Length: 323
Image 1 (cartoon, rainbow, N blue to C red):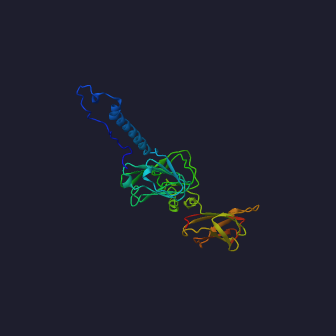
Image 2 (cartoon, rainbow, N blue to C red):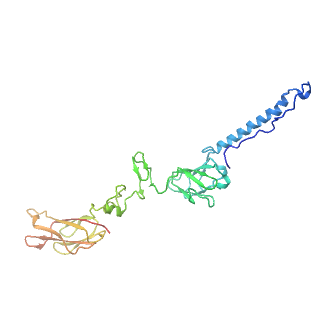
Image 3 (cartoon, rainbow, N blue to C red):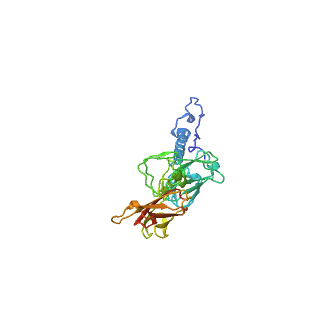
């Protein structure tokens, strides 16, 4: 297709008028009809053709050819130069024109107006877009397509792997490969490399990751479980405890909801006495040597008689590495 404007050459203009021999003859008379035919008509034709070509060139400029709205997959046409393809459907695939047919320069825009679905744009045949067979346009995003007469290239395309949000991105600063500056961050989900993994939480050294509620507990500083147990080995309240096993007076087993990675974890237990006149200092809660990744046995001893005794309550907290 080439340049949007097509140059016009004047035609019908007489550049070699007959010579005037000085005689008062019909051939030497200056007449309007002769001047119009030899000069006026060619100039008029030139001006009209230029006007037509200028209007056609304006239509081929970005935004000059209007908007085509489509809810189905679309083959971009050679007549779509300068046009915006406004895509409203879900899961659509649009195809560029043949670059060798439309030639350079040729530009068109694509807007993915769907609220959640991505849009795929394929290169015609084996032609590439930015060196790939196709590009993905995120919901609500859009870009411009250019060609060099062989393949296709985009500008303004938002990378698919940069950030995924289910609502509007409004944040004072989000820093990754680039910085985004707006007002406040508000979204249902934030996914991808911005979210700390379990391993990163356990290492606890990354300073450029978002900590999600479901992974916060993987950090070494966070308790992996805690429990309050009554004198009858009842689970009064707890976190990450599936059940309590009563092993007799002053002895019970905590069954963890999620096992620890190994037996290399720390548990601290404290007896609590609520009876009037009781002496809590005579009781000690100890962790049995039968420690396992999924269970912890606690024994409470009365130092006055060295007998295993049930206190009113036992508090326990565990730290370590989850499996």
